[in-house]
Image (cartoon, helix red, strand yellow):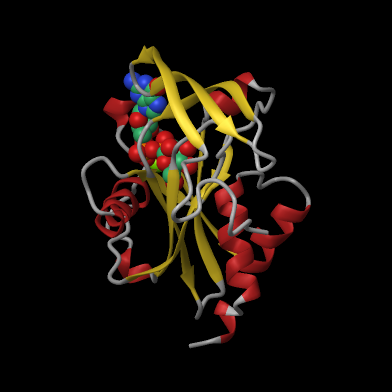
Length: 205
Ligand SMILES: Nc1nc2c(ncn2[C@@H]2O[C@H](COP(=O)(O)OP(=O)(O)O[C@H]3O[C@H](CO)[C@@H](O)[C@H](O)[C@@H]3O)[C@@H](O)[C@H]2O)c(=O)[nH]1
Ligand SMILES: [Mg+2]
């Protein structure tokens, strides 16, 4: 519940004062250590240190074909999952970083590169933090329609960037079963599949 009269509300002092900022790494992503003064709701000020990892924002899309009751997903090697104990490649919706593109343009480019599919309109679902305790990234979520005529190339991603992406076409019920039994463990993918189920996207034409 929002405390309407607490610190940080309109007309009240900021709840957070940024103190020292230390750049720990500035490579693929930017890792920063902040010292902040955080004013608790009871008025007590606390000094905290927090690190943030910033690689920019991303976009992700679930491609659906209502006529064939199928979805298009990707499978690829993910080092962060591998080093934290998940030896299998990850099954995910198509996704990527925005770079300098707007989210809709970025996701169309990713679908083209990773899946070899040229799509038309995309429908925005929302924009969400995936790991807000440490990662600044927000992901723009989309739904798009595909059919076999839109598959114009093999996809697979950019070899020069080390991408090796397999395209999976799955029955929607099978994809949901893979969420239940743990074969799909990527959060953005689960969110989009469950969105499609909750909104009955496969019941419409
Ligand atoms: N040199 C270098 N290259 C990297 C690094 N991390 C990624 N890359 C390269 O940059 C490419 C980025 O590909 P994208 O398709 O743009 O991003 P992604 O890795 O698929 O996913 C990103 O977007 C998703 C949003 O939907 C995110 O969920 C995911 O975490 C990630 O940010 C990778 O395939 C890889 O070649 C790194 O640390 N160093
Ligand atoms: Mg990608």
